[in-house]
Amino acid sequence: MDVYHALQHGIPFETTAHGVIERRDITDPTRGHPDAIAVVRTSGSTGTPKQTLLTASGLAASAEATAQRIGGQGQWLLAVGTQYVAGLAVVSRSVQAGTVPVTIDPGFSPAEFVAGTNQLDHEFTAVSMVPTQMLRLLDDDAAIAALQSYSAILVGGAAIPERITEAAKRYGLHLHRTYGMSETCGGCVYDGVPLPGVTVDTVAHNGVDRLRITGPMVAAGYFANPELTAAHFVDGAYLTDDYGTVTNGVVAVHGRLDDVINTGGVKVSAAKIQQVLQRWVPEAFVTGIPDAEWGHRVSAVVTGDTSEEILADAVRSAMGAPAVPKTWLRLDALPMLENGKPDRITLTTWLTKE
Image 1 (cartoon, rainbow, N blue to C red):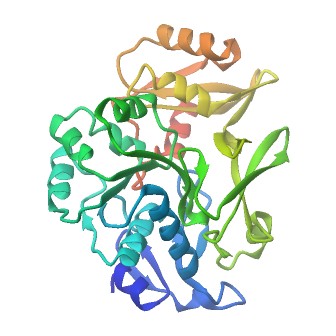
Image 2 (image 1 turned 60 degrees about the horizontal axis):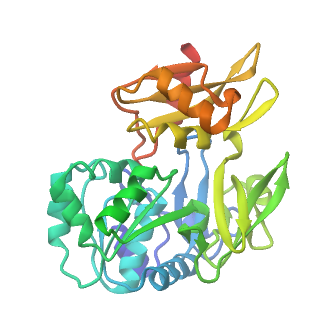
Image 3 (image 1 turned 120 degrees about the horizontal axis):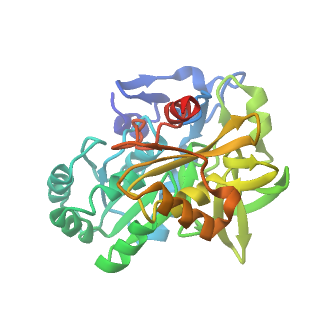
């Protein structure tokens, strides 16, 4: 059994890096939800394991809303593992469209991306990627040409570096910046605008505005974890771990709640510092490390050759002196999880030792 078969035939399942596991237990109403079709484990970048319960109707609603927003249904290139919601969503969209996705390894090279793209034979083609994957295609002419052939390119899972948005304009790419999570069956906000049927508002939380999402693709909760379910799922809405603003219906995500660094009594955003650094370096990671003097010290991991002095000046100019990293670590490349996101736990551990 594979994910496509399970979705087609309504068989409850969980996908892992090693294959598909049938999970009839997730429909047990005492621990799961009677309408659950899939469970997605999200240990992810924080190390806190969760089993998110997705319903067939939620996945279908997500697929239908996505098709409305990107302008059609067709064939997908599957470039993210199906143990993650982004990959599972690609298969769900394919099932709804009646097409079979072309699969490539998530750690693909530009040549492998081009080869996979060339196997697509539908008039409408689409691909979903994380920013790291997209960035590694932008230095290859053949990969850029392949990107230009897509009807829709979805990029999400992390902050989008300016290099990607600039390349989309330069090469005429049909790019959509997506925001969502396992708890919303994947992306539910495209280019800052919620998908049809989705509402995003904010709830005050420790001095910042916490984002809350309502819509038919919101998950049923967490398997065998009623306390965590009650903390995040209220009256059909999902209370995220992100903070941001909603202005005239446009959603701006400013970062994760645990990315707000209180350093010397001043609150700064790790996500915004990272965005500034990524204008100068290929990859960056920023976090706060506990510090006896500062409470938390701003710390950064960067790749590339740009000097720390130039990077510090850039952050100081954009955000002020408190946002300038006090600890720097330079690597050839950031360690990544299988879903293409930076390995926050490993990077934080390394920075703690600096």
